Picture 1 (cartoon, rainbow, N blue to C red):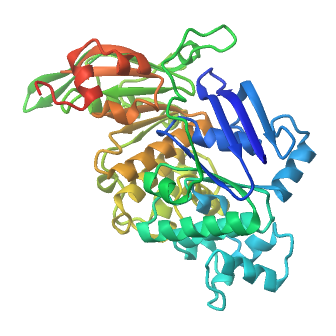
Picture 2 (cartoon, rainbow, N blue to C red):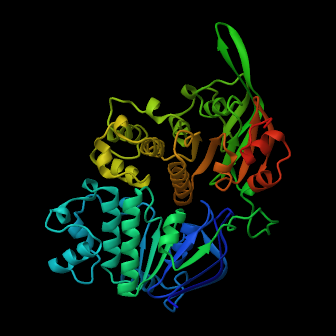
Picture 3 (tube, rainbow, N blue to C red):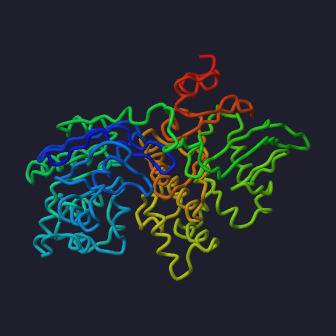
Length: 490
């Protein structure tokens, strides 16, 4: 057995379960698929095997053995040796993990056992990338998504690992390229006797590729009573709070009430879902939180400090800490500016970098949301819907916020892209400690990505509480309709 995981439970710093009782066995020459809904812990499981849990996350139960050792307890030098020589991990967005300033040849030689020219070309050939076309002398930004994935795979294989971990290796690829990579992985596992684990949403790929399947579908259960050692997310410090918010729209002197005494609390590092049918006041609530819509009554506080009702009355730092990702990025990204210029502006405005290093900051932001470096020179209309949404998220992240507020950001996306964007937010929350406010008309979309829910109907909070409880046992008809996807009255 190359890897053996038994009853592994991993908790975030605030007590949220990132992984609950997971089991995994990897054998040389065989491929194991790790499946389950987004947020169930697939990435956390792979990262645990690699000894790279998110900052602050900790194992609370279970055992883990990788090639005879426990990567979560290895001394730093031994862990580095394990990762460099015997275990390779390719993340969900491999392009963001490849240095955009390095050429392909250097990326491979940096970690290769054999750094010779012939060995590097043999690696490229094995992952079915062309040699003799100049690809080895190109930077990552000049490669397609599929080519980037294969470069990352070649970089992993250059170490001649015994264990290969892949997180969504075919996400965003067309079916033909997905099948090509599946065939490649089977070849690599058999030929090199590598124990392979891949996290995957795609049932067709799993059926085509996997020898064994581990389903983490129940890895995020309904919250159980917690001990003092593992506090519930709601027990953490509140970073953003609203109380008694009333708001209205005024047209030609006529005022139409929209919000009626709405309140919510967002814990540091936590995630709150705001759900409701169209017209229930969700967007007005968000605009009120960030100071773009002046309330007629009520308060908004940030770390206990009362904020001015209007954004212009707030300090620059207060505005920086609350960032809004709008529903329609094409309508809010300046069409005359490149994505790089759009990202550079908040970096400089909020002092996150200086002009000399602004370009590096832009590339880092693009990497963080899974966009290639080449996108810095593109304009919004040159991007797909999912790519524009990622660019809008990057613009918000440029301010280094404490709270990211997202308004229906998956409503115009296909199902697969919507899942990818929501996974991106979960990863950013995990990596950066962001607090998230996710607004949607689809409770199922946010159900496994939020700690608590606020359900709006006609501008009023009709139900709120832990997400799992509301999803499993809704007490209001609006919540029940959103949970089942059945229209009200249907």
